[in-house]
Image 1 (cartoon, rainbow, N blue to C red):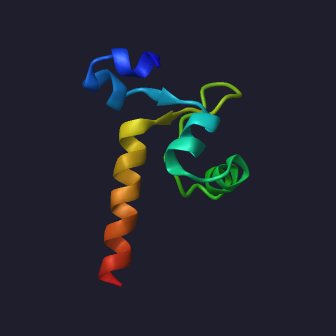
Image 2: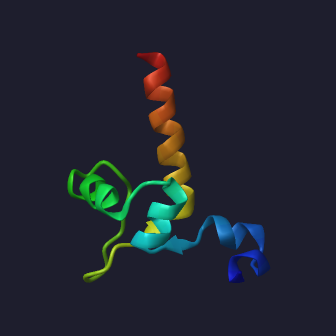
Image 3: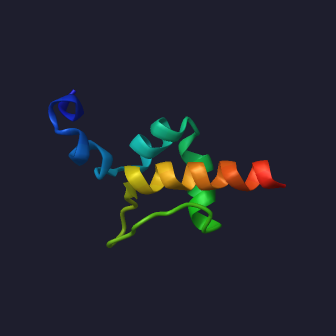
Length: 71
């Protein structure tokens, strides 16, 4: 994989497509589209395509986890 050849910092800040983000989060693409439409997940949309920053997704996961533990 190309990702394995990139420095770790570049891997963390890489942009993921909808398919890559769904795979990273272990959810289906339709489930990810639902989260995007409900504005529940960090996403960028320059033009018609959706892009997800891997670092922001990790932060989002950790923030969601902390909220559940506090409830």
